[in-house]
Length: 230
Image: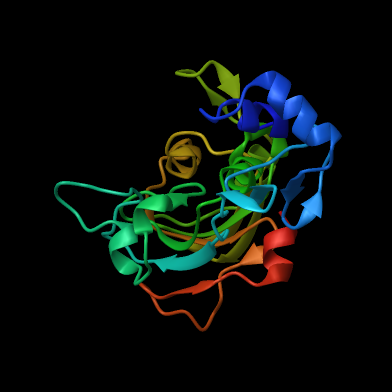
């Protein structure tokens, strides 16, 4: 939100007063004087007028979780445990998921209270690479590699999937990197060959890789390097 709009929305201030406050260098954001009302502020910004604190600013929080199978990617659910149930953190209701995993899919899940950060992570235009280990019921042949690289037509959405990279690890296991997130996309892609996916595990999202030291159900805060790489 623009700073002048934030200030004007406060009941004790109007637009004219806000202009005077900004022009006279009486507004501080995160400790620095700001005179430009077009400056962007967020829920994480500390905002003061004449040293009176108007918004303390929340601390931005970023976590990676090793999601186990059988846990729902949701903030609340009537039948299953949710990923937030696995977190021992205060004010968990402020957190949301930056992307989701199906009930029976395991692996990397990112959780934050920073909406702008999570939008950069999940918006379709970003085409962020997401890597998965896939296990299948039937053998995976080299034919899959070329078909996935060309894209598959999904009649329900009337679209062709973006090129995906497949690396075959063994007869029934492969690494697949997607650059989009269609509904049950991986299962539908392998379903093109009548090959059922029996195991699915997300390894990475962009440059953020699942910490190998995290057991299923465990989590940790992201490092500063991991946060800025999105």
